[in-house]
Length: 170
Image (cartoon, rainbow, N blue to C red):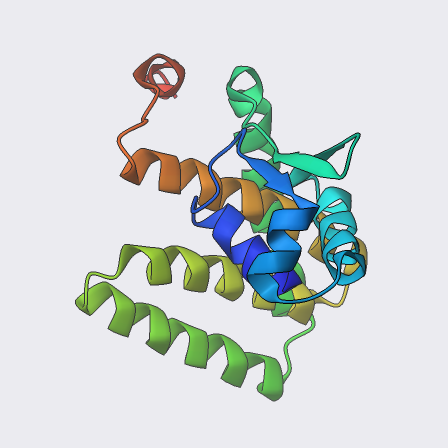
């Protein structure tokens, strides 16, 4: 349930600001509210939802005003995790990364945008894990989640041209 809810938040089945109700989710998953509550707690720890009183939560908004800081952190973590993965190179890590790359190529050839975004995040997270620093991995995973949501918003026609125009001079 947690994994499915997370994917639905990342692919914008639940858009930013959408309400998530424990009772409705329990009915949907044919379970009690306790497992739903646990899944929502995990999503809250990842800052994907904002818990509210009365057994509800909302999907976290994307902070457009701080996209510059987001992209600074994203670029920094991309470089740091790739460098650390290269330093701590192991064959099993390489096999995993190559397999994900093949899947990305196949998804790209099939023009399956959601799969490309999910596999890209999985690819970069595999590199982060290969680096062996769990702090880098958890930080980068949060950034990758945000990146997926931003890119899905773009695909939904919500490109926020004012925000993206800030990067024209870079």
